[in-house]
Length: 490
Ligand SMILES: [Zn+2]
Image (cartoon, rainbow, N blue to C red; front, side, top):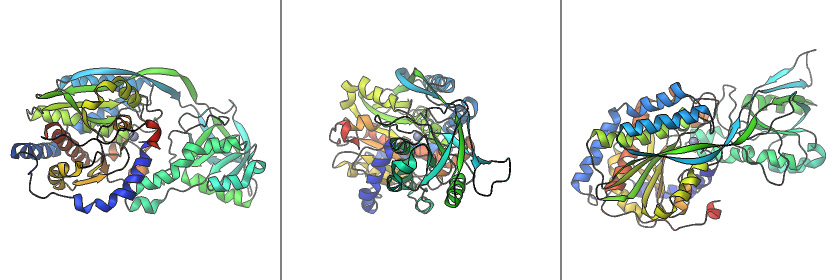
């Protein structure tokens, strides 16, 4: 997940958390769904908990294919793999073409070459990684003084006179206490503003490069990448994330006196490349034209292997189809598995889908995405019309047995890839995972398969399958949220 989902989630916590208690569980057991449907949902839940399908798919995506940055050979291989796996399940598979940014990470090194107390002929290494989309430094790198700003206000106080010609480090810390208390997304939302907007804010004051303190609570000197957002009215300057440890060191040394840094980065932005959303339909028996989406995003950053962000989401969505096949079920409405392309640095896949499917968006009865990792699911956050909550009570009842019974309403669309269609009036759901450790690994080299706990992934598979099947078979359709212009998104 990246920046776009943050806003909706902040709104959710501020406005949605008061209703946690009252929406938990249900009144009469299964009174809104038939006893047969309730029994089917319980079977799906139990089967998901023991099935190895999702785990083996995310294992293949991560260990066999590897990192899947948009435009890369691995992303292309992952498209073929998921398409083939969905065909094996008997789904009608289509590849939906979308043009994606093609940014390639290069060399990236940093060292402090001048600072108080320096031993002769030495330097201090700085562990860093380019932010996605960053331009390169000159081939031999650049050398400049470093100036530290805690936040945007402090940057503006420093002003052009002190910033011009320098490397600006935004040293805004990720709030570990918030994360430990279960508010990791909110901590991320606060800090990620500097990764997104910091480079252009510094460039407007004449900075020659920008560094940000890594967003996240990793403390093994791991840099955390992610997209930056160059402003149209600012020069594009090279931008990188330094580890939290290195940010501390630089701040300490600059508090003593002059610090000069040699920064070298050689990323390249190639022409946009063709890629694909993978779409697999399991046709409904009574209303094949009505569609329920289950989804995750197939692309990932390239430092790790994209296990928790978001191979897990794709695998869990595939598992819904696998379980329905395995149990010989025949949902009334169509269940559509989507592996989205380019969530991390552009959102091209989700925009292409909303455009290509504009004429059938009214027939999308619900869309689910998992993009907050593979931790224990607590339930869902959702964006739907008034009156949706009572219709979801039976789902909560089934999932409460896993500790995943929360239905947390949001005033804004949830999850990045399904946001464009929610703005078109489709009810949207995001899996609400335990995120206390998510940002230890997210967008770092440590986002690898071992971070996925089999039992927790299986719980996620259960949650998605139960909700999807309920949406595909429930007697009444969910009330739809109002259509909104995409400009209202922020
Ligand atoms: Zn993601």
